[in-house]
Length: 435
Image (cartoon, helix red, strand yellow):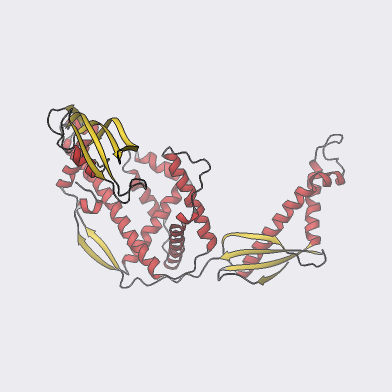
């Protein structure tokens, strides 16, 4: 086999022209046809006794295609190994029309190689780490949230206030005409949950059952196009105001949350443990985001177009699947590629940078680290041992855990190089909870 480079159109693109003796290809084709002939079954012939020329006529085209594909792939792989090239994405093969005699087969391979990655220095980069503890007040707030989630409602004669469940009829008009989505009958809403626009909920507060009201409302500028920034008029009739009745924090409440013996203090301990787990995840996510941003900002590399294009396709497919999961019809749906290019470029860039950092600093996930991560995640389930076995029964699931451990190793490595700044924060601030 002979190979020679040809002109590339980018710094990462490579074009190779490979030449293979036609005799070796024909020899391989004949060899495979003979193998088929040994067991071929055709009407009028005993198995394995079909004349070779008939076998060749029947299977020749298919075998030739298979041989050509195998030869191209094999010779290309050998040349890559010889030149020590790492292909990024899928190569493109094409026959080369040289105009020479048919004593050799020539083809071109066009592909991109992985770039050289210059990992930037993290010296001087700041990593903010919140200082936060889980206190009794945080547990109390969580219990209050759980009580509200399990609230029952009873009709009341008083005026509606935050937390009440009210049932209303409403009709909205724009310039005196009804608009799509602007009316409903027996519509239920819990005031304060944010399901409706703030101004709409504000107008409902203070109303009692069987009261009616007409009010103007201006839609936000970032609302759906046909209504954005426009002022409409709503006529609302309150049918009933229901006040919440929260469950008492007692043994029954604790049992409803999974505490078998109903011990309230045990329940509080489990809530604290859950809050600490969630806090740990949030702090890790914040640190990871800062480290990744710093690495992306300081590192230098050229992005392979093929990897970006592949990532765009993956993100498109993922978005369609998400829409399907929400019950939307996605038949023949084609999401524009440009919606995903920026995100794809960032993901590819970070992937290449992390690969370099891991390789250069020996940050691969160790078996003990993977095991510890699996066991920690399994703790929040009823049967942790079963969850551990579930993870280890599937290499793909275990691979996802391994990737997370590697990211944690990179963050820990980066912390040693960045300027760590501690910031006192409350639990609600870190978890972005608005009360």
